Structure formats: structure tokens, C-alpha cells
Image (cartoon, rainbow, N blue to C red; front, top):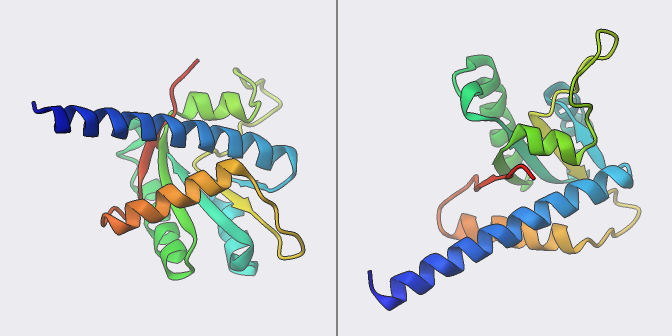
Length: 160
């Protein structure tokens, strides 16, 4: 491996860490400010009613769920809608870390049902211009990825 290749690999790893941290920061901030829609069905309803308020769509899935055909169909439809409406979109793995970030209970009791974390929408209502460093970083990464013909970039959230 040449020096240039080593530097490029190191820069790519650094960029992934930065983007992953930005996604985590963004999700926590969006939830705190009630700008997060959670669930495939809830997300589809929101995008149908007000697609212009959606600034980021995260599709989350772990390896063991990759064979879920129904989920893949939902993802394909959501991805298509996001592309048609210029909504930044990312694929994410690490469902446990996602649940941890969003304060989901580790074990759901018989009375509570776990939320569907497979689709998350971050919204920014037209009435205010919410500026988040995490949102700027993630949007920049999505744009850069599209420039490299990677229409749906992928990141992995690591457990801590």
C-alpha cells in the first residue's frame, strides 16, 4: 500500500467517525426538540402530508433483518420517495445503539411495545430555521456521497 492510499484510508475512517458522531448528536437533539418521527408507518404518513418539512431520513436495519422482504419493500418505497423529494437519506446499522440513543428501554415489559426504529425522520418546520452542527455535517456527507454515485450512504452505529 502506498502512502497516498494509507492517507486516503485514514481520512475515510476519520470522516466516518465524524459523520457517525454527527448522526448521534442530531438524533438526540431532534428528539429533545420534538423534531423526530419514529416508525415506518408514522414516517410514511408524515412524508405524505408534509414532505417539505423532512430534512433527513434514516433507514435502520441490522444484518439479521436483511432478509425481511416486507421491510425491504418499505425501504425501497421510502428511498424512492426521498429521492423524488430531495430528502437526504442514509442507511444505518446498529439498532441497539439507536435504541440506546433514543432512550428506549432495554427490555420491553408485557405492557409496553417497543417502537419501530427502522425508519427515522428528522424534520425542520418551515416556521423556523433550526441550525444543528450535526444536521449540517450529515447533509454535507449525503451530498458528497451522491456526488460519488452512492445515493444512499451507509454508516454503522457502534455500541458503547
